[in-house]
Image (cartoon, rainbow, N blue to C red; front, side):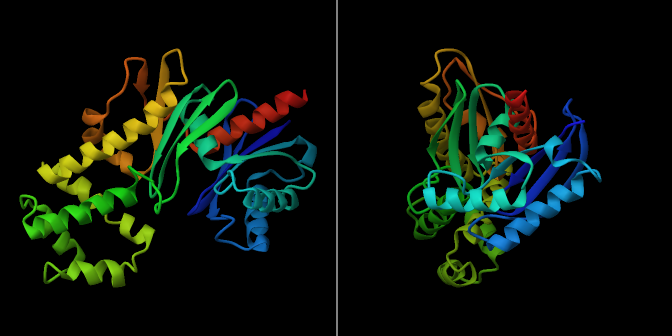
Length: 300
């Protein structure tokens, strides 16, 4: 019997799921991140080996193991690609494996291996399409150059709206008091030291403020709804850029914490008639399983 392992290695965790030939889940485990920029080579190898050995039944021959591995950082940077390939090669000696980017397995899982578009809007943002066996990406330039529509971008919009409302450049809504209360600020201008000192002006820390926009939108705050309208415009841009390559109806799926606000995003998305938004069908580990299954099929 052959076994298939789907691995989703992101920036916060590494998830392992064991499947049989019929895509039935046999076992799962979640371990710390093995991200190439966050762990040493030895640490990453230990995490990858531990995950595989934990989910695999005892005494399974390596030749009957197929691994699909979606890892953050496995992109266009040749140096990072080489380092990741070296780590994976040492981790899975004697086993059949295939490496992809974590966004690619996210798309394959969400669309069940079908062609289409996948939009990530978490701490960062990017769009990815899959057509004729090829992936294409837009966005994902990082928070200093882009990441429009991400949680970081959403939080920055919130902070900028706050400053404008405090100044009187925009009508004051509940946004100012909610942000002050959430951040435990006594004075309107304490936001400056809060962002620069307490949040250390770090991307992830700032992005953690994004749920405040969702909270405000639930209470029909006009400024928050306006921010979501801008966010939808940015996500629509990612989708349009990729959808123009398709000459047939295309499905668009998604992932990331920003999409929790889908009910506030959807009314402002501008999609062509042939573009259809759909909830993800499976998680990224299933997308990695599809890579592993394809690897086995190609060997048969």
